[in-house]
Length: 287
Image (cartoon, rainbow, N blue to C red):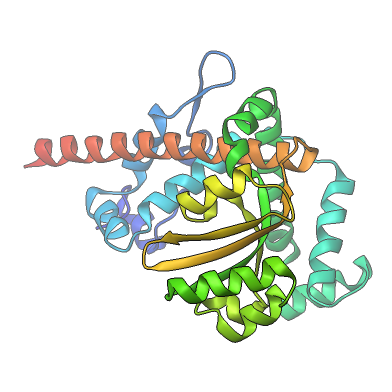
């Protein structure tokens, strides 16, 4: 048996659903802006039996369900202006090949969705962004400074070779101007950079091998690095562009979203742990 309730209620509702007062408020407001998740497990325990919870868990659906409930409840009070929703609709329309809001019904028909469903999805995304900014904007710059090195972007030319002597020869040709880096990469590179004329990036600086990261970090744009070994490869590298990350509105929003996601993950894990504990207690009582 999956649902709990009266026999007639179970017969009328063969699927897992949250109805009535159980779905009204699954969180308690704690001190400040924090949300306590103690009642989440209690409410789910009342409407979904341990067997139902095990079924959801078996199909990897229990945690996503709890996470969605956490997100919906924590963002319910976020205010989204009508023009923001209209902009989101227009953006979606343009990504799908339409050009104006008047074509919204056409998009609904194409996707087979109701206005309530599709607008609700957009509104949920906007509420998440609004709540993330409201709760974490004061901490966004500190988060950015912690992660700045990971956010810096680089573009560099790369020749990856297995032969040390060939690497040295090609380095000398590039240094003297005898040959073009892109041409040599297209002919001699032994990695995927062969298909891009040796160009790598823009990519986060820390995405590269630690040895390469350290060399790029102290290089200046235009510097050609002498061949050096990384694992089984000899690399010839020239730094083309270094773009230090700056704290823009876009970056601030990204930092807020990172912290919001971590917060939601903690709330979800806490609720799941309590739910599983409540389920174990219930099983012991009925055995």
